[in-house]
Length: 516
Image (cartoon, one colour):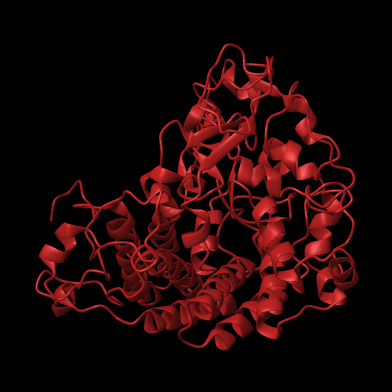
């Protein structure tokens, strides 16, 4: 064997070997910048997104397909070979913990595939060059999801709590509540998708979602961070922020970094909020802008934020906010901020100055407690067809209190002719705005065919409010980022993604998704 390479036979002998193998799995967690909302009606970049616009075609290759299988292979490798460490003297409980981490990541990889492609090849072992599974047909999504549930249940039974992991070197590793929270995410997706696309057993999935979310809520391990804006700043880093259930860690400084991200890319055109998103934020009385007596048509950009849900000003730049290199935000630069709205989450102007020079080390929340509360509320409503005020109190109303909004109750909904389902969905949309959830939500709710073909609108074009820019405008003077004529959504095709063409050539038993 080469003396400068660790052989597989000499590995898997110690806890440090297992930890090193497991650490590789964490490199597959999502990273900044956050541009996934450009696939939806919430975000728009400097050019149109081909998925949002409906102009995409099957790619030759795609990391959306290959990367999850790389993760799954690495996880399978740990699950199979970690047992060798027991023979070498490693305590079985220690081995089991790293296998549990691997099962979490295997579930992560398969959910990424199921969301996009539906039925996919199910690979549970590492493969040799002549393995029959290399040309296996797709397994039904129900079978794949069953493995996801099994992996996450087994992981949750073994993994330590966040408290046991502590705030030291083990902070950021997969915990019991991370496995449960992710299980709730998967089950909500599968349950609502089955319900609104009319297949499978929605009740079974939604029951799992409620139970998993409730287990996290009753664990005593998590609560909401006091300040919504600071969630996405340095103040929100570490175990002292009990809202974060799983984060992608970036380190702390130029001299102590894991990764870094340049949030300047985001504020300079990579992802801009749309009018559709901004208009979704409630007024301070808890009513939509088209129902609230507090709403007054703004006469300048800064007035959009008056008497609104506090999360709007924490998520979208307003006049006076720190913007670039400690320069206050004045008005949108439409050459970059094509909608007239500028993203604010994660923006820390001091990071753009020396010594960081545009490198930021704010951690990315991958799963946070707010999502669990939203999952519990939505799954409860969709499972029962209603939700009690008591369940609203322990879920959505905790988020509304942080946003300085009145409680959502059944009486409030009835008194103002609102829809409880739509208000629950609204809370999810604004709480998780620009964090990569919106596209998958409109897919599972089966409303993508309604919302995506609409034109992408931006801010009202206030006279003198945008410098000398002259964008295309609608008849009622809103910025038109993309016309509806150039957008489409094929409901018989686009709810599933196309398999890469090269993968179809490699595996003759892999059948392309319908109508691609």
